[in-house]
Image (cartoon, rainbow, N blue to C red; front, top):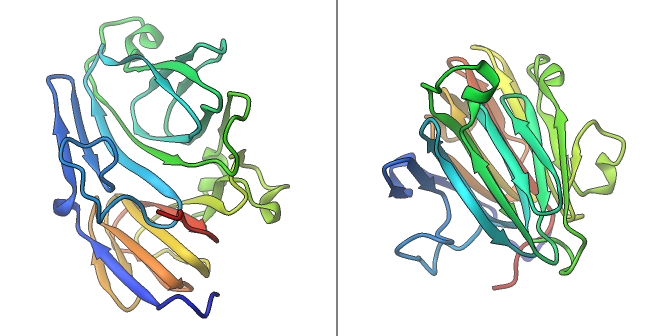
Length: 255
């Protein structure tokens, strides 16, 4: 733990997030990148630049658009999301399956709520997912794509590493991201279950569903987040069925 950092636990309630709303999309933004009213005081915490909670209506989605020099991790909570990109990759992302796209030197992709193609009928349900963006260690990498089924590991109720660029997770069952200082962990908890957060210079805890109790802080409801600096090791206990996403980071962005 760096002696230069001041320990801090910063709770960000769901209602403080900025939001975008279109006829087909509801999006809530933990950070201000890409929002209509950018907030220079809320650009990131540690390494993530984006932590968006999106709800995409049936038969709609993000048309083909470009990205560059970004590691994009998608975690679906409900429904299914169809991905296609200009490098020839395609996939269907659903709960329990982690997806990573490395934009690198430049890539075009689309993301659609196309679940009716799988069910053979007209879609009726939105797709609900969290999308997270992290800068790579180096710009200009070759664009890439990876998806991996994590659902089985989540049944243990522990904190499961689902995406990492850190050497200590090299042999873990996780997708790889191009940042050696970052890892994303997920836990699905039943009431009464708990996990211990890792210790790191920076942590970002997001309550994706349900509610939990954070040791020393109290109740966190769906959509609440906590930004930890120079601390960790806190106990997170589920008060109802819950799912949490935790970024462990050993560096930050120099802004």
